[in-house]
Amino acid sequence: MLVKVAITHTTALSAFGVGTRGLARALAGGSFAGMPADQPLANPRARKMMSRAAYLAARALADLVRETGWEAAPIGYYLGVGGSGGSLDDVIALLDASLVDGAFSLTRFGDRGLAACNPLLAFQLMNNFTMCHGAILEGLRGPNSAVFSRGAGTIAALAEAVYAVRSGECLHAITGGADAPKHPVTTAELAREGYLARGLMPADAVGLLALARSTSRDEVIVDGVAYVSGRGRPPGQAIVDVFERVSTRDTGVDVIVIAPWGPPAADTLRAAASARFPEALILDTTPLGESLAASPALAVSAAVDALRDRPGRAAVLTLGVDGDPCAVALSRGAA
Image (cartoon, rainbow, N blue to C red; front, side, top):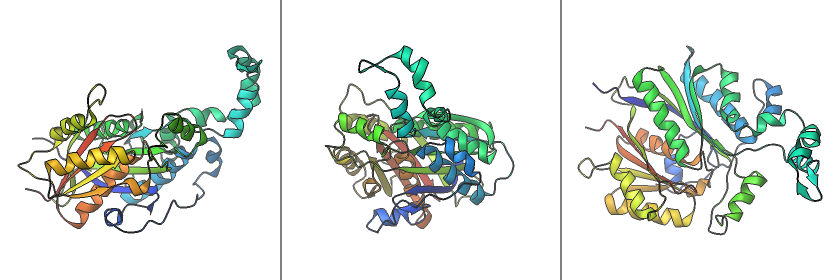
């Protein structure tokens, strides 16, 4: 018999504020509290080694572990992570010391550049430490993976976490994504690639989901996770392909949450959702901004929140700047 995996708890730090209760209603027309102010971690000294995304992940992870009450390690941790987000002062000092006649020199970088910055910068620059810092602080000690994400990577992390719980590799797992695209380097990258001009609104955020084997019909079940490459074919067709992997017209869908990187992607996702399930309520995460690795996790959290209010079936459709559409199917109390 196939083991069912449930999403037992969710949490987030985003433009919605702290947590995810009420997120679905807010997306349907409510207000947003805004990103909460930074708060000290249990180990304040660790903050010096953290990027902005790592701090957000560590703070949200502490909240989620406390809420779940899971005291017995190991706990799996599978996180979609964004680009490096080191201290800009240190990065500039490193680059200045690495220039020869106005051009970057790898030799000078080794001789002088590395010595010009704080050695702790390395922990801010390594993408996997967005996951590692929090895992160390909370003592998770379970199977883990940090997946680089511009959208689809976060759904891949979710798929890994579901498999880990379903296969018995771990009893509990935490997954989601954390990113800080408001960092000047990432914002500049998005500007160069034309996304800002087309309406992308960068927003720092983290979204985390707690997974365990289902023990009750009243839990939100992960029925399917899928992602496909959008390269070499029209986005609309790729979205239809991935949507068909997790949904059938026979079972129906009550709520569809779309997570687009900006207006062009929103139009494409909304058209695909409306064509397949014209009666479904469509919620759009655009008001939260685009948080790259975190956006898909926020969309799944919104779908979970919607199902807490009303049992049924929900689908999540995502299309990030990587161009790879993803879909997640969820249900609660559905036949």
